[in-house]
Amino acid sequence: MDGNLVGRGNVRKLWVTEIGLFRDHLLRLDPDSRRMRFGMAADDRFVEDYALRVNDMKSLVYGYVEDGEVRAAAELRRLGAALRGEAEAAFSVEKDYQDSGIGTDLLGRIIRSARNRGIHRIYMNCLLENRKMQRVARKYEAVLHFEHGEVVGEVEPATPNYFSIWREAVEDEMGFVMAVLDIQRRLLPAA
Image (cartoon, rainbow, N blue to C red; front, side, top):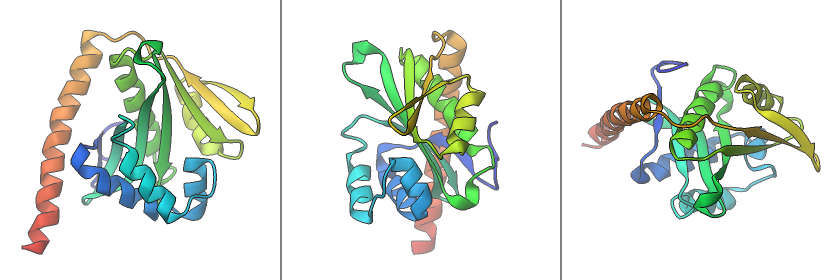
């Protein structure tokens, strides 16, 4: 699924300058969605601190952006040394945008980005009751196993090829254009 999933939005990488949009999205999550994202209850202060550290953790973040607001996000973060080739993925979708295919699209983008970066295993931890995330993971043939009250999904991305790299580059160019348009949209009402 690409492009227009819910309304006028699009899925794209979030740029360093858009971390505030990512933070605002995480703060808008209802208590249950926030607990599903972080695996525990997380207050506003925790969420704000987490969002500020995303760049320090060298995370790659995709977002579903609609009307200049991030409504869903997926984060890919390497685990340990880069040579290990392992990463963790985490997802969040605001309640009104759930069950619309956005999570599926986000996971597809994360898998391709991991593939293009030489990551050979992606881990996704979720609470046992997070059936929605488990269904999305199964769509990408994730191996799910249970550990200490959580479900851990493992996906092994294919080896990168010219097409996967080209497709990500093209989407990055389009995403950059959309980011510039979003910035203009946010600044125009203020002018």
